[in-house]
Image (cartoon, rainbow, N blue to C red; front, top):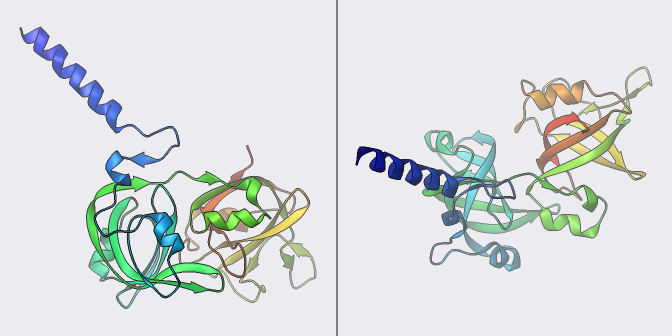
Length: 252
């Protein structure tokens, strides 16, 4: 009898683990992660909402950019799209709770700044549930009008070539700049250029999101013109695509 019970328990554990495994897209979480509470917008409804209108969303923390004076800036996403939360009302204690994957309900207003669609003047509450988005490969969308459909999502780019970002004081080409115009210093945002199929794009390491102690900051400082790389990050928008890069690796 004990052997039978042991086998039944083992089978139950196997089934339980199978039910909690990540799906084929690489995203982690459960079916509950896709369910919206009553009165909460789907991503399609949020996307269709007018600017300056009130929005109520449920979403999942993917990365935290900054906290200052009880305001937090956070990258979030669900299975259908992403939401950039700008200066969300948040105590320092609650900011510590917003770990990657945390589910939150947010009430705020949809806004746009230089092409970046975001949620502002918002409050939130933490809910049960967890979801972490896999990087979506948008390499083929670079330079197309449809890239914006993935705005704020966690994305990847494959097989890029590092191009000159500008020149140093001696007039030599360099692979990155501190700030967009090279007027910054170590610890500021990093700007670097990459090309694909003859077109060049500018990527950024946002120093509030990934400061000078991070692997990606060091990786970009070590880039050389002509390097072949893959990159991951959040598809931020500023007068066009301005990806906030969180990882750079040699191209596979």
